[in-house]
Image (tube, rainbow, N blue to C red):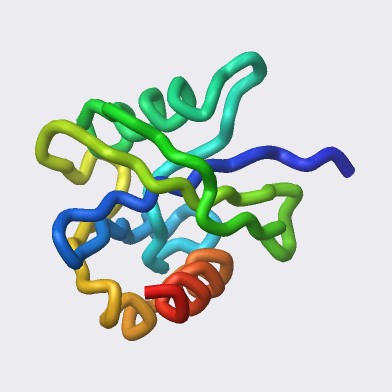
Length: 127
């Protein structure tokens, strides 16, 4: 089965990161995740994250860096790349049911989607 490349934006502000609660009707509904989505054919990482975050949060992306962590998402054909992302603007809940700025130390206390949890646990070990 071919893999689908997905980018998860790791947006930091001081010692906090932005996470979003998935709509209940979607896969992993009600769980928290890093915002982002699928990379379309021919898109660069910057183009994909810019498109996804405008749709999901109404913000402009100013920079996307190399992945901090890459993981095949169990139960799907997604390969998720967690990429540091810089934004301009104030995030809004355009697609998610809720958004939150949380300290890196508190990430694992949230009910995260499985791949996002694996990243959070790995990311915390590096911080």
